[in-house]
Length: 146
Length: 143
Length: 321
Image (cartoon, rainbow over all chains, first blue to last red):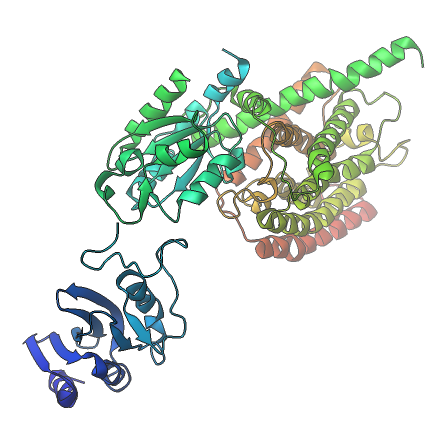
């Protein structure tokens, strides 16, 4: 696959995205809302055959933003999917672990530290925090924990 | 001084405990135990079990998860036992001073179980192996 | 038994070449091992009294016995091991230095006694109630069943080679010490294999899987602290002299009756010790399955070949086979 073909494949996602930017040849930024994350990631993983690198979660003041980083090694391209979770009280998004087992632990970590609930995750338990850490306290949220 | 203290100073066996360090101090501790610095001159030997240890080399600020384990390792070490707090985080939490998962520097946790514990501090981020050797030798001399 | 005899026996058992002498030689040998290793690493190493300091320090620490462990076996195992190694050392020294003394024990007795330190380690590890100790114990058992056969086969080679007709007690230590089977092809093979077996028996790298310090946190000895650990250290120190002494007796011609013979014997002992140290410092630790394969599938056939060569040599009268 070359750059044009990759761009073409990504553009087929346009109706699920709220934004598509390509600031340089090797960087893509796809923005979408929480409900389309599953479909977009599945397309990138299975159809484009990109490699899942890691996911990051950011606490913007009025929403949570999860960035899924995918790498297309053949062309040295990184595709970042920015998903916005608008519900601050109960941030929920579909888990991508069912088709991407490698995402299991990073989603657990995001749940542990930021309180994002991943629907469909096979084992959403404590991963990083101490066993006796109180429930419902998410340290990495703004105004976080003691 | 009693023959127990005298022989302890001649042959301190060390056990390394990481209670939440970033690994920088751990690398320096392991570096210190390599042939270049030759701590075997002082009788120092790295042992695999806390039950064989005379000195605990504790690195890192103590996290909430690691605190009970540190206490258990200290209790498993037969007394007399010296605790060395290696690095700024072990001495006084360093840059993780207001971290959400830190429950205290090493001396606070150890003194909860043993108020008379012998604790020596080797500050630095990380301390150089020479500083660690100097700290160990001074602590043994002051025993 | 007259009073004189009793006193003499006590002297032999407790002073020379018994408890004090064996322990002193053992601690000296431990220092030699650490010092030579240090020199190989291009560093200085510990002072000569370091092993003594280690033992004294351990005697001064508190004794900890695991609550869930078998307390009686836990405490008795190091004592058993230490006692066995002392008897072995005394037996070997007496057989070498005073071959004319009445029957103390022959080479078969020595082979039996050599198994006691390993058995004690296995017992102690099993009584520790720790999963690390259980792994260490199972590894020690596997190691023992690997090298014991090789050691006995090597001994058989020496017996075939050296035991001439007309010896009154062909299996006694004195008779074994009188010949030098190593100057022959089969003897040299058997000598080399027996050195490797001794390496495994002593728990030295590359065969220190049972007490792998950083892998299983001390393995067999993980729960031992204080004076009991001191007994283990003493046992290992005494074995560090006794086992090379066995090899010297069987293969290298032991200690002679004259002063030159004694000096030569010391030289041979140091030679075997240095071989052990060199192998220790130039090899990584092997896995337990690699160790078993090594002893069964490499040393075994080599020794069988050596036995056949020795028998051919004996039958045809060819000395150097």
